[in-house]
Length: 173
Image (cartoon, rainbow, N blue to C red):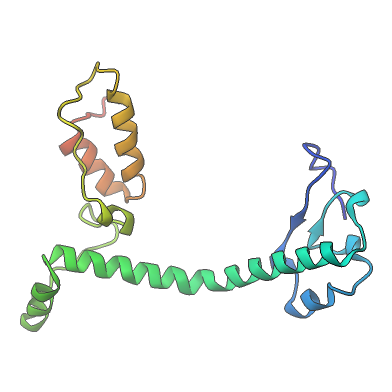
């Protein structure tokens, strides 16, 4: 099922793990009509009936299917871990968090608030630009780009607060 959409190269392999069932994944190893399958695309001359190529396709599709099935649980775990880190940070530490929990005064944070920090952002809390590098210095744009890349993982409200309050860059639009 080769397509002309891949004119950039005569040597490519496109696998679609969403389009193959687990049962057919195992049948793939001894199937002799691989080029007619909707989940594999490569140039017609590259369809060689050897076990090494089929094994490579089988292992690639299997690992991609496993990653697709693990995506939702891993995302859920990541969101809970991120929320836990923000709860601990907002309440100062774990002990204060548990003390506030007993008092019923836990400080909560919303995912879209300017106080919410991603897990990456919680590893390095620096948000201020280097005070020794001023606009006009040849290192200024490099330092600004590095800090912008660092906060690119954060939500919009957090980024707006940092740009406005710490970097003092005013939107003039």
